[in-house]
Image (tube, rainbow, N blue to C red; front, side):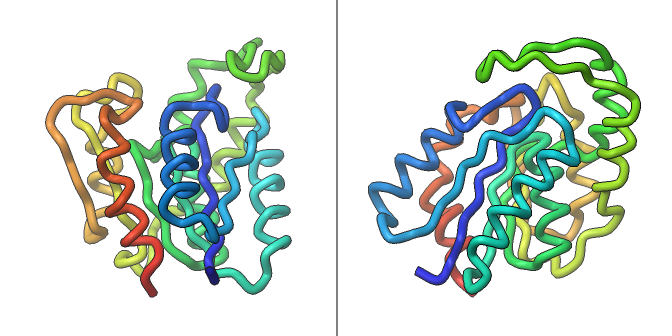
Length: 192
């Protein structure tokens, strides 16, 4: 297939997250020839962006597709705006540089066990990756649940106005029952 799908997990998450593994299992079963990457993103924004860009450079002839959850949705927006392609965003972070101000200090990534220190300079790195406006709105699909306990879904509803959008009452930040959307997600991503 002519596509590269990159799944981007959120802050303090990993390729072993439920949504990531459900997506990978779906692709293996239904699209075995599809190139898919689910990288372990660095805990720091610039390093995470570099990992994604290094993957993109390995597939210069592929059409880019992104699936991003939370902070991965923020990074997916940046990459889609920079490189084109399509993106499905699941409860995406819109202003993570505001949210993560409350997370400055030491952390342990629960999935990798890696210890790291989140500092003000990392907030500035996030600001540098912000896309104030999104273009070619038809290339986005935003999935939101209103009871997201981490992010206010209305920020994404406003930012991605005019894009394909699904807003479900209830749910949570993990986006409950995400797997039921996978057939439609891949139909959306794998058409030009």
